[in-house]
Length: 188
Image (cartoon, rainbow, N blue to C red; front, side):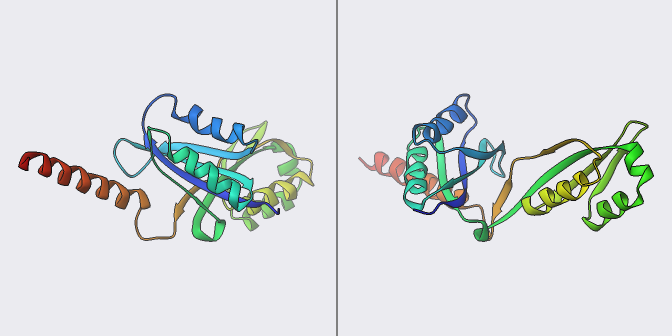
């Protein structure tokens, strides 16, 4: 079966050990995580994990369900790229001498809408924010000049194209169910 590139958005309580539980699900299914980003979400006390992996539809569905069963996980859902707004950041350390000797390097940096963040006698630091293909493409263009001293790319960050965070509706329903159950307890 052909594999597709998926992004999982996982929301959990901010508790130590959750990341280990989540990555263990991928390990057991022998699915390699391509990128991983963890940060606070827009909801107080809830963290967001953005995980990318190649998988087939059946396998990614099973992984998502297993992750969602974890006690500290609030919600997990997988997406394809067309369902998300995606960004990454690339950092490039370039040889200052090569950049000064070849004006084409500066033109490429401008053409890719990258930003020079530091210049010193040894290196020029460049930052590019965008989609994976643009960041990798800039690396390849700069590497042709032999000026790249170091290069790294961040993990993917993503938000859904819907108007609200899906976990918000889920948490609101949980709170309503809790309040309803609490109200029923009082009437007994």
